Length: 240
Image: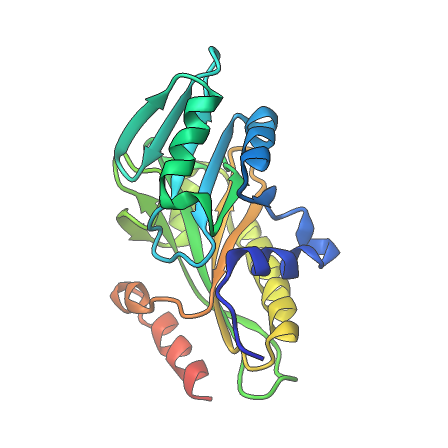
């Protein structure tokens, strides 16, 4: 079966697994009604292109106390006075089609900058091969950005957890377990799938969230890590 990068399809696959559903942020296809309802329920939401990558074209919308809206894309911000103005703006952009709207996660921070975790999960050739976590690092957002794809630095996960004061190796073990279950779920749907780079978030209440899984993850950050064993392990799995 053709592996589809579509975030909405992936959300449906992962959400069908009971143990994973609680680790997925609330998500809907973007329409005027779903946007209004999500903003009423959460006040902070994210718009993402279904087939986007590298954090491009992601829009953050925040409802304020006077029912106005703050919209941030990368490091630029605009304001809308009311929901009608917001909906008109959405309709006038290319975001009217092909987007999802998602509950915004309040990610844990390091020096007031949000971070998330990239974890590689791979299996050897053959659909019966078990999935294993083969590498990980933390991505810290640049100053003024809400997406970690624009990073100020990459550091080890344990170091990030210590700096954010939200956990230790026990949290990392939980993240690896969730990632393996998620990879197995996707692998059952896509038998040819052998690697997934998951973006995992931890909120300020130490709850673990699956942000998304990338089927063709960028390996360059692993190559730049001080610990080269992860990169070698990832390459070994790609070849075997």
